[in-house]
Length: 71
Image (cartoon, rainbow, N blue to C red):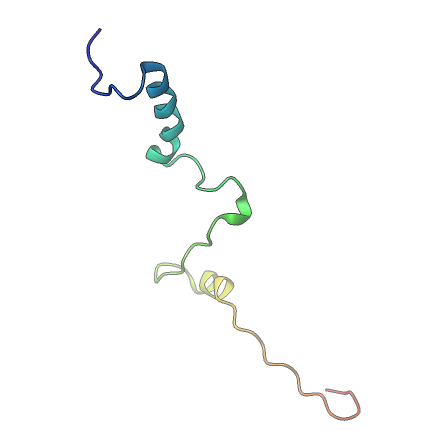
């Protein structure tokens, strides 16, 4: 059998570690297990105005209420 270049681990552990790192290397797995921990995408110039407005909402000012409780 040819030397694999790694004498720190055995062949079985090397294969297991390769399998575990495959998603990170190829990018076909999520970075986080929980979907809520995923970051939101950044808005750039290529996005439409509708998408930019949805991702960067501007808070509406509070309505002015007079002494009688009416707007």
